[in-house]
Structures are given as structure tokens and as C-alpha cells.
Amino acid sequence: MSRDITKARRNATPHKDLIDWVAVGRRIRELRGFDVTQQQLAVAIGVSQGHLSYMERGEKEIGAEILLRISREFGKSIEWLLTGESKIADSRQ
Image (cartoon, rainbow, N blue to C red; front, side):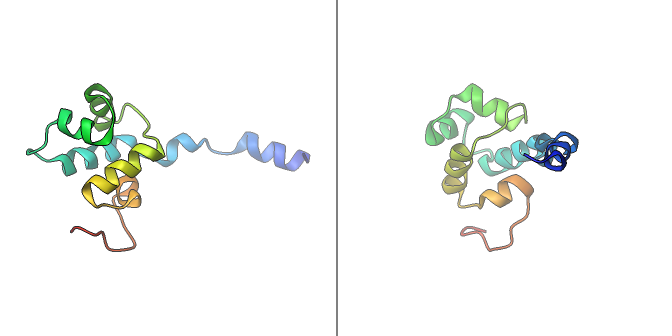
């Protein structure tokens, strides 16, 4: 590996800051609404209620598989879940 690439990797901004997990959690909570309990959504997406609670508070990074399950459950894009924006129309608006 060249020295320039090694130096660039050391100076790169960590990827951790790219996603605002608290905002992602808020969007999940917004989608869940008042009609669906954490337990009901947790069962639907295959996680524990406690894990969903951590995700909604932004205390856990959410993996691609769980994001995909949430997006399919609510008909929202993964991009919208992560950023709050979507370039293509969601299937349910």
C-alpha cells in the first residue's frame, strides 16, 4: 500500500459521524405512531422490545438487515430512514 493511501486513511473522518442515529430513532418512533407498541413492532421486525427501545433512542447503530425490515414494514425507503429525505417517492405517503 502506498504511503499516501495509508496517510489518507489515518486522517480520514470516522464514518461514525455520517449518520445521526438519534434522528433515525425519531423517524422509527414517528412511523410506529401511537397505534403500534414497541413490542408489536419488535416482533414484526424480529428484534427484542429492548433492542427496539435502544434504536428509537439512538443508542444503537442499526444494521442493514433491520433497516430493510423496518423499511418494508412501513413502506418507506432506507434512505428516508437514514436521512429523512428520499429522492424517489415512497410507496406509502
